[in-house]
Length: 252
Image 1 (tube, helix red, strand yellow):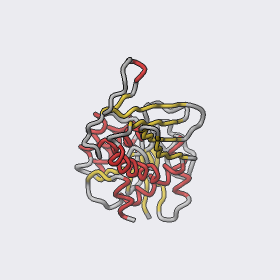
Image 2: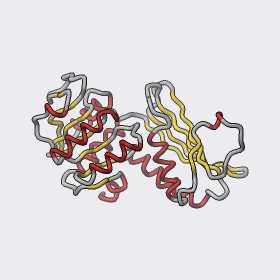
Image 3: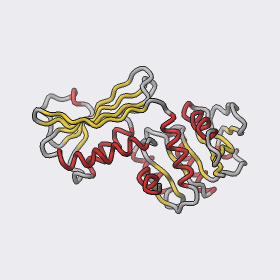
Image 4: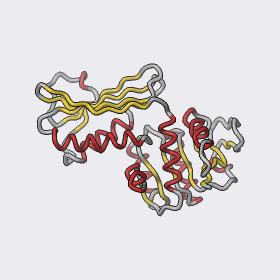
């Protein structure tokens, strides 16, 4: 039985994690951490990591980038693996994650959906074939409460494409701010926010007289929760280092 500490447990995704874990017989949530401290299930909820007394085998974090430092400090101190599912991290946050991974195993990806990670692989293959003659644009759509733009997933997709093309592309986020023709070596990034859209990502390869699109649409947030729980089960007992969805898929 894998025992999970849920960080950000009172948020929307934290509650979806709780629901997802209840559907499984090989894991359980033993405690939660959330600033609200709201008690809504059988496990205790603490407002800070320092209060946690219960045993855990792994942490699942769906909280906020501001909580990262305390999260990593606690995890390293307790030698606990961490599944980081929060988005909106900057370069300094990534540096801290990489530093902590030298001491503990960390599962880190911008999107917990297996489908999105497959999309990234398909986009890499398409870019290798099409890039010389096709322009690349990424369009992402999310609900009106999402704070960061472009989404971490859109950046992940762009990075995946760029890595397969010798990182020669730069990203264009704000094309309306300048009057100039499109640069051949750019990947355009476009963000749409509205309603209750869970998450949609489209990669468009636009060539002469033809367009090829690859897309993924998440219909509920449970796909991300399922991915995070599967990552937690995978991460238990692993050596220190950074793990991604590719490692999880390869293990199946």
